[in-house]
Image (cartoon, rainbow, N blue to C red):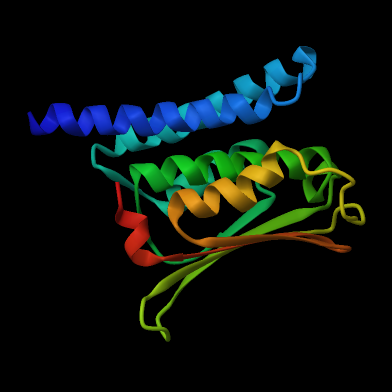
Length: 195
């Protein structure tokens, strides 16, 4: 009974995430020639995150393992990772999988990874000076083309700023600095273990 309830809960979480991805990707009569590959790419990223969870044979995975599997796959040695070992629940791991995928995809299309010299630094640390310890994560791009504020916000930006922060119960921000995009996420560490 307990296993069945846990499985039902996990499936509902995954389906809710897939539904949100489908809804945002196909929003406003999207051109199917563009929307279909974007949707399939996002589903593939979720699948990779799920594979990591299954292969770990636990209910959690390490932040570094997830970040390397998702972001480095697209960037081949141009993403530098720095941070302590942090366990993530399945719920947080899948949400971060989608965020890392969107960040890497956008960096390849428009940002630091769109040329041959740009880099990305993905760093995280635990801040314990407040009443509740907090994970601070930063994706910082450099060496790419000059960045300017986009005229419209795409799915990736909306998902990263709004859905991710609410899904993991933290706050996030995307800054379009001229020398490179910076995404930051702050999450109470207690939320990282919630299923």
